[in-house]
Length: 182
Image (cartoon, rainbow, N blue to C red):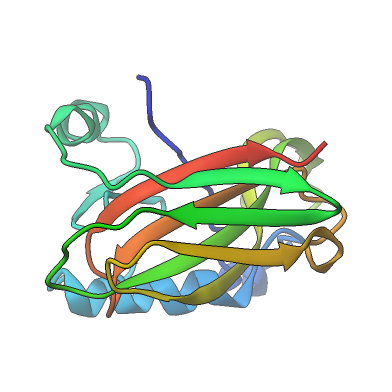
């Protein structure tokens, strides 16, 4: 499907079963618990898919995930560019009633992992769009804005970035863009 940014936030709470996921990032568990609260879920679970910040599904529920992805959206354009070793995020003037967090997600597009222990012992995992860093770039309130950040602040194993506009308190996603770093 076009215009979809699927990101894998690896959690660390399965590390105790014999194999440590070296792609786990602390923010993944924090965001998952915030979704439990925001979406009124009974608990966190894996594999979990959150679509557009407002719908949660078991990762194997392809039919419901595809239906959620096909829902129409009015999106706010986000523009990304690289110049002089800086990432530039441009946001338009738009009369909005709510504030949005501007979040940067640096990610590794693909990796192969051999699992030595735990329930997946002996398996080779083909993994995609693995989040390596998540950070806030500030809050956008509908005014034309340009945000700059140095590329050297992004982990070296991340070769792509996504920027998402998400209603504060981890609400719905209203806009996004992705860009290759090299």
